Amino acid sequence: MPTVSFEITPCPPEELRALRAELGVSDPMAQVLISRGHREPAAARAFLEALEEHPASAFAGIGLAVETILDHAGRGARITIHGDYDVDGICSTAILVRTLRELGANVDSFIPDRAEGYGLSLATVERLAARGTELLITADCAITAVEEVAAARELGLSVVVTDHHRPRSDGRLPDAPIVHPALCGYPCRELCATAVAYKLAEALVAASGGEVRALRRDLDLVALATVADVVELVGENRTLLRRGLRALAATAKPGLRALMAVAGIEPGKLDERSIGFGLAPRLNAAGRLYRADAGLELILTEDPARAAQIAQELDRANHERREIERRIRFEAEAQIAELGERDAYVLAGERWHPGVVGIVASRLVEQSGRPVVMLALDGENARGSGRSIDGFDLLAGLEACSAHLARFGGHRAAAGMELRRGDVESFAAALDAHAAEAMRSLQATIVEKVDAVLGAGELSIELAEELHMLAPFGRGNPPVCLMVAEASLHDPRPMGEGRHLRFTVASRGARARAVSFGQGGRLPVEEGTPVDATFSLEVNEWNGVSEPRLVLRRAQALARPAEVEPAAATGAGAEASAELALF
Image 1 (cartoon, rainbow, N blue to C red):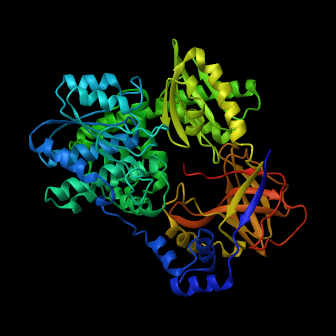
Image 2: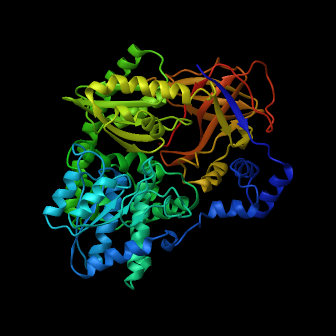
Image 3: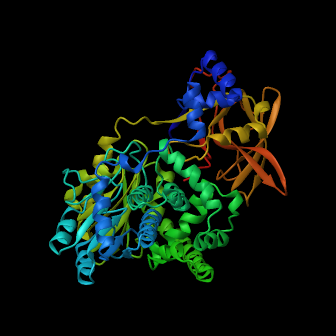
C-alpha cells in the first residue's frame, strides 16, 4: 500500500502578517491563502471576492456565429439545438433554446439517447435534414465531428459548433463557426459547455439590442453544469459558480424547484455538494436509463404540476440507477480480483447498462487507484466509459490504443468509447501497457497537500465559517486540508451500523470532536499513538445546534513523537484514507 507524504508550504512570517493586517483574516486562514498561491493581499482579496469575468467578445470568431444564428432567426428558418444527454449537455441546450425563443426564432432541440451514442452522428444529421432543419447548433458536442459537419453542409444545413471538449489529435476541426474556450483564445479555457452557451446567449442578446442582465436568471443552469462536469473552480468558473449558487437558491424555474423538493434540498442551504450529490444525479438518471430529453423538459417547462411529475420520474430513475450500479459494481470487483494487479483495468459485462458503467468506473478508480474502463457488451459491439487518476491522461491513452477502437472521445479524466467485442482483449492489453509506461514516473507515495498546521484549540466554529469564504470547493479548489499538530486519536465509537467512527483528537492540551467515514468503525492507528493527521473542518448542525466538526482525511503513526514544522513534509507509515470528497 502507498505511503503518505504530507506536503506543507512554508509560510514566511512577513507574508502572514501582511495578509492578517490587510484582509483582517486569522492566522490559519492566512496560511491557507499562502498555501494556495495567494501570497499578495491584492491577489488574495481578488480570489476571495470571486469577481473575475470576461465579455463574450473574448471568444475569437464569436461574431460569425452570432451573425449566422441571427440571420437564420430573422428569416424564420428552422433552427435545431443538438445537445448531449448529461447535465452539461441538457443545461447548455436549455439556455440556447430559451434565448432563441425569446428572440423570436423558430427553434427546437434534439437530445440523443445513449443507445445512439455520444455526439453528432451521420444518422442524426440525415434525420434533421429530412425534417427541415436549416441551422444546426451543437451544444456540448461536435468539435471532433469533422465528417458529420461536412455531411450536414452537403445536405444544405448551416452549422455552428459550441463545445468545450478536446479536439481531434490530427488537428482537424469542423468547417463551421466555432465557439470553444480553448480554441477561441478565451481567458478561461476550462468553461463547461453551459457556460459557453451562456456566453453565446449574451452575445446574441447584445447584438439584438436586448438586456443582457436578464440572462442572469440562467446562471442557475451554469452552476449545475459547472459542478456536474467537474471543471476547475478557478478564475471565471469560480465567479460563475458562486453567482450561480445564489441564482439557484432563488430560482423561479418550476423544474429546478421541483427537483430540489424531491431531493430533499432546502434552497437556503444549497451548495456545491447539494448539486453534486442531489440534483445532478437525478438530472443525469433519465438520460442514463430512459428518455434523455426528460431533464430538458424539466428545465424548460413553466407548468409547476408538470415539473413535479417529471421530477418524480427522475427521482425514480435515480433510485433504479443506484440498484443497477450496485449489481454492476459487484460483478466488476470480482473481475478485478481475478485479474490481479494491473496498471489499467478494462472490465466488460453482458448485462451492464451503458448509462451506468461510468459511475461504477469512478467508484473503482477510487478503490483501486488505477484508471478503469467499463464496457457494456451488446452482441458484437462494446460501448462504455472510462475514468482516470491524477497523473494519467486517459484520452491520450485511448489515442495511443485507437487501432483497437471504433470511436472515442472525452477528457483527460473521463472518456467514452465504442469498439467491437473481438477487440476488447487486445484493447485491454494495449491500455495496460500504455498505462504502465505512462505512469512509470509516478511516485508510490500519496502526497497530501496541507493548507495549514494548527492545534486542536484553534478548531472553532468561527474558523470553520471563515474557511467557507474559500468556497465553492471542487477540482482546482479542493476542500481545505488542515493538519493538527502533535495529535493523537482517542475514545473511538462506531456509528452508522459500524461503517463510520466518531472519536476525539487531542493536541497541545486541547481536544476536538472528529469523525471518520468508511473506515469500518476502527481507528487507522492504535489509540493514543502520536500521529500525523489531516482533517477537513466543517460546521455540523444537529437538532438546531451548530458546532465545529473535524472529518478525518489521512492519518499515519509517527516513528517517534515529533513536532510538525510548517516548512517540512513528513514521512511514511501505516496509511489510512477517509476523505470526504465532494465529487
